Length: 124
Image (tube, rainbow, N blue to C red; front, side):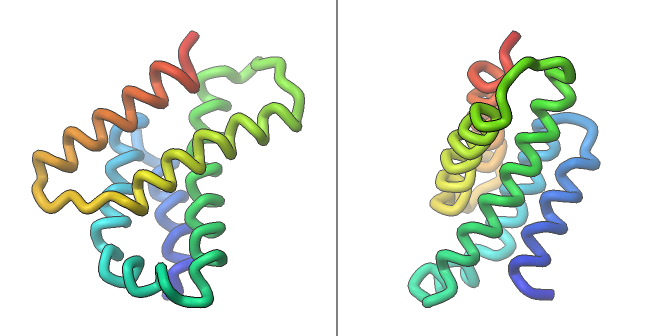
């Protein structure tokens, strides 16, 4: 399976999780599983395409959170896209840069991402 399909499958799996924290774990696990491949691809001519695919999968995840938390949110299409892309770029960027080696590091990292999303993007 190619990286693009793997990233989209990761996004689909994350959407099936019972809460945001478990969904974020899916993203962290994906990055750790593909860490060496991602490092090699970072310097390839295909990196922009890979980055876009990862970003798209992150947008799908965040969009689902937004729909669940605020089903009646009144926001323009343009503003929604800017909001989703803003958070997706940040989340994708820190995930792609993540180098956690230990399980404890993963849990702290997952908690930090969950805190940011919960306290800023989707706070009521």
